Length: 194
View 1 (spheres, rainbow, N blue to C red):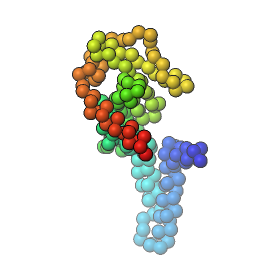
View 2: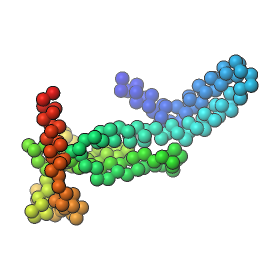
View 3: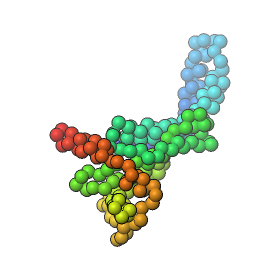
View 4: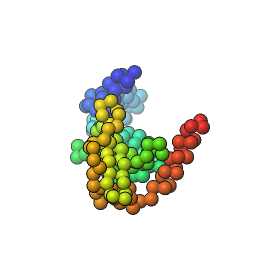
């Protein structure tokens, strides 16, 4: 089923064929309308207008789907802190000139108490999800990073801790994460009781 959906998505959204199919459907509907209403515009004009509009709107649909799906994953979750939300458009997609969708979101959230530390997640349009676990030590301003290997198991990026950047000090040491940690603990308890 996934193969069929991806083929349909490619035909209708990611290629010119979908735009052509929409224009052909509009042509035949306009042709039928012309038979019923003789004053209706020529089917070629209707199909041309539909093709022109579709050419500038259909290619942008995946960007708006990404925005909708990504925001639905983070909105309403008080344990997630959005650090950066960037809007991305494209010069070849005029619809994004007027309403630019979110193309990148960088979030940080605490891990559950048994693991400790934090999780940084970078979600970008048409790019793979990047997840990094961090273990900051605010007393000496150092941090450990771990990233998933090809099996999905998190491994440290180095044997020694790294000096924290100014941004990381602000993010992990100066910001009070108590509310986010409490919200995550409540969510974990809620899921365990279901």
